[in-house]
Image (tube, rainbow, N blue to C red; front, side):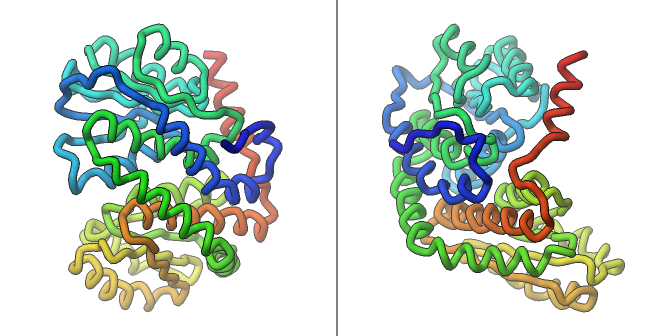
Length: 337
């Protein structure tokens, strides 16, 4: 297994280059996880924020077409009233000290939920050990957003262990690793070209509903890595509101379409038709087709492409892709209250 140490001293490009190594290491870790018993549950809530929380969103969307129970993600201090002793809570906090997640877990205990955890340590891991909750420990020392490859695999392993998905996820991740490794240079070239094209624009990411978590990941990485703003929307919802807003579109906007052969045929047609409206306002439109045979493979491909793009975008903007001083300031300020 690759040893992760002094990772915070690495530049973001090296961390993004480690993505497939993280996925491979994560599979090794996941293979060691076993459950003594599986509780009865009727719904699932994945609690986490930021780089730790995006995996829950993506998991819920990738399980939606075959999981027999609803899977939702929560990114707040509070949890829904439906949480009870028939709810499975999966708490994912890379540091183990995310204050919103810890407070949510306190509420989950009060509401009698079944709890499982993914973390590299901190208070969450301590709580899991003290309460004998299922826990998958991952290596620490990374920025949470750079630990996505470690945590998303553990979320799929938890989903498998609790009977929400089949073991097929692992082969799909392994196929994604092989594809990304074989096409790394091509992916990096495409990512750099996109970054160069949008460096002075406000990016808008459009995609299908099942890829909304991936689009959110692009937004997050644009914010944290390249220190820029962006937004996203999904089809078909975008056609029922935001399309009208394109009356005020300008050349300062750049649209990035993330598409897939899993998109509903009517969604593909909607994208085609609405692009004609958007193109009247800006010529800066880019298309990226997800690669791979499964939804998992395609999601991982688009995530890796987006991660590289934001690293290059930071270069073009002269930004430090590692630095998150304003988040550190906010956490420090909140600790005083």
